[in-house]
Image (tube, one colour):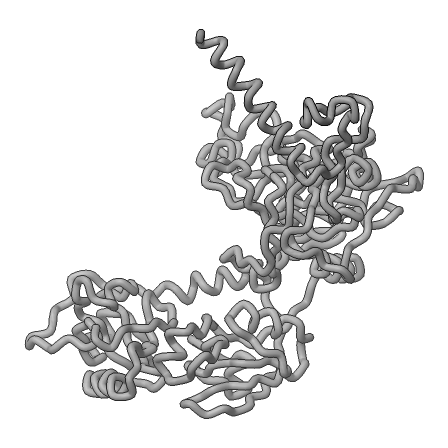
Length: 524
């Protein structure tokens, strides 16, 4: 057999195999020619009904849905000013996890290197959709946050200028208003709040990937409650979808099979920058609530207690004999903040807020944020194995930029090189050689006088402490939330854990000026 014959046979065989498999589906939707049914059981009359009928709940086609909702979906073109040096540093913005993509000339490409202008214009694209007949558009904050000019293009090619009504960094949502001097009426869509699709249900996305407006893709809901590992996950339990979305889809809608918006596409997981079938959308109920507030006031105000927190993990619960307890552990307090004034302490484990159970730090932040500034937040707390209640009067949450700047300021703790090792060898505890915080150590580590604990001098290679990232210059402040100021206290806490049959202890660590908690194996 020649190569062409083999190739031809392979193709025909594959197609035939598909036909046979389809015919084998319990005869669903198949109708045989009676005259040939016995001699050719797989022969199908060309004039009969469709070969394949989808199972209940799945559409034969998405065309009707697309025709109905696509006029409400728009392409958004943004003109902004960016630093010329930044444009040269990240040509094409290939590394961005989100999906604004420059249109036309790539940033930095074909530009005169002798041009000393500090800023240059950049064109970028995203997606959005109408939620009202008079021209209110929902999109992502990262699509328009630096916009000087915004142009909205409809499916029929009409173009409108738009302005920002309000933006929310926390959920990455923004609301626009198109300039509509002729009072035209726009097709708009509704949010689905009552009947949340199940994992496995169909979803169709429409948007502007790579500047290709009006693009439809389909897939299923893959998962709920995804955490993207950034500040937005404090306020959003993301939907994971497998309908292909790419750069430029940001801000576009995902629909159920009834044409109702179930989410706003905001991010993709992709090593290459293109779609690998893992996309994330903001749930419709969150979008509806946030956009309603933005339309009224232009910004979102959230509650705030002023505490650095982290998840209280299963290892931490085991280390403290708390079984399956989950929550958020307070690593540090903002001096003079609401939590400190209300009596919350570092090491406290917050388990509920206003009666709502919290399983991790994101859920705590989300519940606190629901409160209004001035509200009293009732926290259930575990402190020294005792359950107590702490009332905190909520403050106003700073912007994400202000919080990031504060983190940078708080993280300036530096360790001076060339520190003098201890003169006498000390036995390791929990895989570390520790030293008291005397005046010399404080000066060397640039520590505030209020800091109490033990300095990490060395970490044994291969130990659990080394695996958990502890290093010379870190400060151990507590063991199982109890403050420690001597090596004997650390050793005693480890020995107590061993006798209780526990494999781990929870240690408080000050590393690079940042407080936190980690679990260490008691055998080091």
